[in-house]
Image (cartoon, rainbow, N blue to C red; front, side, top):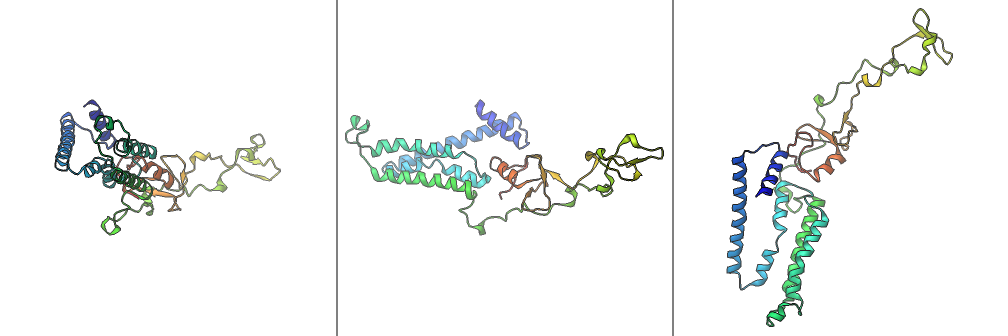
Length: 272
């Protein structure tokens, strides 16, 4: 119960939605109802399908199906590490393979008439492999790759033009001709009339105050993830979210592999 409360609280904090104690209790109660409801339904199905052992085993080993459906609903591209997916698929396949495919297993010592069913085990391994392949394909091609495009809503355009309100105003009054490097003039050679002589032997000219780089405004934006400059003239180099936050394409794509939410305001992001 304590760990469930921590997980629910952390998830809602990430979405910037605080939960009261009453709301948290309601969510935990609903979660328990779903769990025990699914458990009772499974028991009833096993009871009525007891004569068909193979179908029962296939239903019990459809453990990746809920995750596949959740990926489609939440559009999570990489919710789990590939090693975890492969490891869980292999370890969960060991028990049925040993019990039903190995002829000299320990159950034969208890019940010599225990059947050996190789073909159902092959179907089970194939079914687990199909689930694993779908999960990996969702990570590579998108969570909804198996759904026809005509049934999907239109995708959001992350390369849409940047609104002028998001671009910083350029300082048109400052030009390169107005900037004098400190090393170009010698303050010891300044005349009484405010002129200086160039160290390289140039003629006298009026001294111009040095302008630091920090005071020059540039028409650039920085990525909040990597803190590097974004080329706003390259639509393929940036991604603009629905909440009008701009990032490097590579930075945001890597972020979306972990969380489908804006790094700045934590709003949900549509799939690419």
